[in-house]
Length: 317
Image 1 (cartoon, helix red, strand yellow):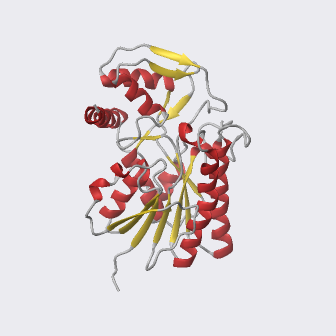
Image 2 (cartoon, one colour):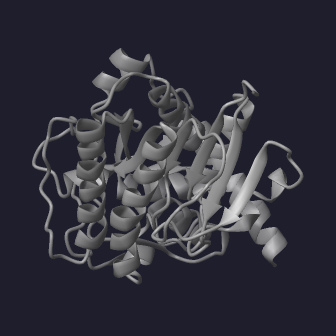
């Protein structure tokens, strides 16, 4: 029997799923990627075509998942993750974190596999605690427009812990904070591709509200490193992975103008309902438990991301 371990990544054609797949392959895993391509794109994994250690299955994880053979590790990353997506497809968003999580956990139980769920800082909602620790229960509006995403992820965490407690399943929960880097979708509505796309196309940068709301941006390779380390740990409760370097959205817009070498106006629009006013991870647990903290400086990460979008727009045109 082969000693090579097999990992399943749902949402493998997405931004984070594709980078995670690359890391797992680099670590020597055979990877089975799964995606229904509603928000994912095969372009993100086309460089893996012909790789004997990678198989891709187009599948909707809200339907029963059957895989023959050995599975050692399951990463459940399938889910719309940007407001523009989950506001357009709220029911599918709820289903992928409820039915999809149930199906992925069922596969893990059948195979005796370790299970890691991609949760989110949105579990904290519009937080009354700052920075946010894993012990904070959050301030979420369950019936607001963002509730379809926030509550779906909170349910997914509850389901994961239920399988851990009831079935003894080896489970992990990562709460992901704002992440950026190559392979983000240009039109996905999140602030990084939105600002970079507008700047590179000579459009005014759109800031919602007065821009005083804060975000903390983690470069994708740092995030994936934290997630991989968590998958190899023996810890079962949620862990924040993100960069605690906090800045206002207005400051971020100004940084993008500087890094793209553009002089464009910044326009303001109404703040969306339930938009978090602050977002900053407390990563004390990740530092202690995983020996992890972000390494890529903001300036370096943004330069790489701008270069990616420049190339993307050049090819697109």
